[in-house]
Image (cartoon, rainbow, N blue to C red):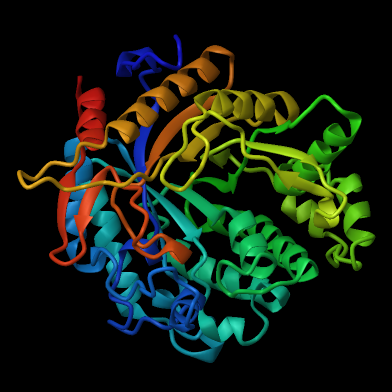
Length: 454
């Protein structure tokens, strides 16, 4: 099947999982209700200049109150899985139970949410950490502190004991690259740090907390499937030169292999460690037993795919001595990201070839464009519709090549708070009018529903 041909549901295995993805901070709102504590993203939003439109997520999509209609919409689409995340500050407003009581109202909300999914035939896929660390933990060092690993385990224990009888698919962390590298090095995400060494240490603690949480989740949720979700990119060199090839290897070492290698039992890549050691001694501190914990076997690898990257050698390009190149004459999303269904095929086949995971779940894939709600109540998002069709065809190509992709989760069900972009970017297959909280399925969402129900 060509990636330019719209697929049909029957082209996929009968047990293929079809879903939508969301995250707590981006849609829930109720930022100061029912005992919820402050997160690092609440604090980040309050700092002038951090969010492009000056907004915050205190209301967002008001999913906290409107979740029944959102779940109704997901059911009507025909998906059989719903990926969501749990807000740590809603469960432990002070970060740990040792510094304050567990917030029963927060747990009760996720009881209602999970029960609502099950009532509608939606399989709950819970992400434990989608970036909203409790602010009190940040004030104790955040992910730079090894104590935060212990705090994550305590939080994980509380949540999985409460929901583990009903939730059987758990994702420990969403996109450690974004929470750590963009949060502690690039400074564009919370908490806004600017240190490569800090970012690498944060990465290590996040990966360690993932590995140590797995046996806890399995103990509390009998028969559960556990994994982690990574944002990964296929990377090509700008030319055939040896310099660009070396730049590609350096960039891939930090972007992809830094996470994949330790998760699959290889430890951190030696070439990347050497570069970090020569870049202000930025390599993380790793204690005995850490790498074995990180390599704890998972049941699936979650992959988020948005765009490919091209790099060239750049002597002034920082520790990786590489810089990104924008390919000319290609389609791009409203975010400026290159649209490449073939990149998804290349990425999935590379992961299968190099790491051989038993199961891959495509936990996010989506696009943002300048959506307009017409006076007659429609959103004609032809570009997103084409994007969705072509990327589903790419998933089918990967399946035909033997890649064990078992599910696809569209990002996202709803337009939402898009982190540092505020409300300027719309990724949803449903349009949200933030003034009225009215939801309207876009043409892409209508097509996805037809695809799933045909």
